[in-house]
Length: 615
Ligand code: SF4
Image 1: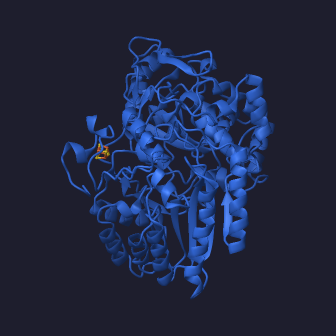
Image 2: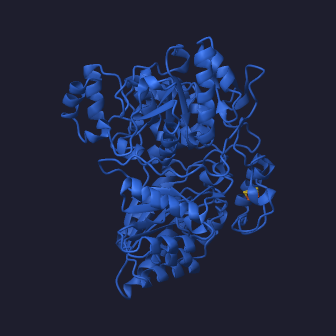
Image 3: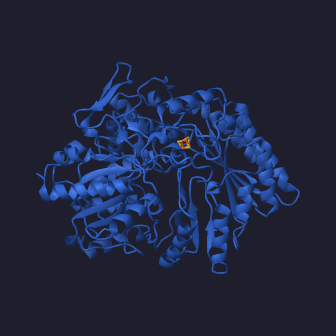
């Protein structure tokens, strides 16, 4: 791309810094001096993609290798897309401005199903055939990773391969094979894919066949060549590799505009709806000293004034109080704010947030998920109303004035009374504060969408008609209380639900929806349900079959060939316990429940080494 072409395009679009590159810590290597060139892509707007932690890990890791170059690309916003198409300029990377089609490997991060049409759009803008079967040996290898690949089937038509699980080790092994193939191979992609399918955690969909029963359920999934494995094991790294300390610092505001240190990966709480709780097991913690050093390095390299201690459940990190105390002391008076995402709903967490020196009392965020104790027990996120109110009392006494609460609608066994209880609970919280000053309460209600590899994966998702009255109860009740309320569009939830538990017959539906104009589906102003409905109709598929059908426990699921580490028997047992409202204790503090990680070679350190709580 010539500089003056880009210059004239950027004058016509909003937020041109999305495309200009050259950010602090971005890496521009000599194209000719490396053996493998990788484009790392997040299929959403720059502001969303730059906040993706997984891609920044891979960017730093790959660029540390002298023989490899990694550059970035994000989905161009609609105005930029129009400019690219009218000038017939293929989509390019931010660093070298080279067309993506010139890279050896193009890696998409799939973290949200409603970005799938953006993947197709970006391939099209890059002038790369969308279907893996239509790409030739001279096209880049198109791969994907991220949490969505734990059900790889809906995107299998478009990908040469998908990485199942954590990418840090797999990507290096993949590049090693790729380099060897480039030097010594026949140049045939088929040969490369046959070799890559032997790497643990790599799934090559074209080497597998899916057969269906006449009722549309799956009869079998299996490899078509003898040396491909019948199941693909999720990869994970243990111990955690060194933290990211040179992240790219954007010139414009992005969603998570702060430094971040991942203090632990994995969670043992066992909330039954939570996919992250199964697909990131086992729990792995970074040491106190490693985190402290990483914060020092990050601030030195980026100049951020805020650092987030990333984890699925920050309050559960062993020694969190000591860590926060060390960081607060170390950075006292130096304008560094520490933020603690994903706090447990208890007074300990409030005290923890309060202990951060110099922190302005902004907002506290908690996720009770359900309005009643009964329903919280069902989903294994048990916290009593009394504890919940005590936590809120402590927060208000300590001066927090803004509270954000996350709930889900459509949970198993949920009744309208459970939904009305959310309003009641918010009312009681408001009353706690009214003695001094009423707290500002924001309530957010997402739709419960059963996710693959969770113990609720067999359940039916609520239909739009079920969600409507629930939204009404909350809208009316919360307005009366003066609380802000936001909710997830039921039609967007439906498409997300279909794509998350779909099979490979959805490839043509995604393709058709994109042809009809679907893109940026995660953005409500761009989402258009009619396009999707038409695509389903034309392909002769019913979205309700995927989203609204309870599956028998012995049905072969589209992701049955993906071994995520947590045993299917364990998930079935948890499903039965959901139905009977029985809780399962957190194995970090209680006994090991033999979830399946214990059988893995690298598996769960707690089980294999007999370590006690807080290992
Ligand atoms: S193997 Fe046992 S201790 Fe480890 S995560 Fe699973 S249930 Fe918990």
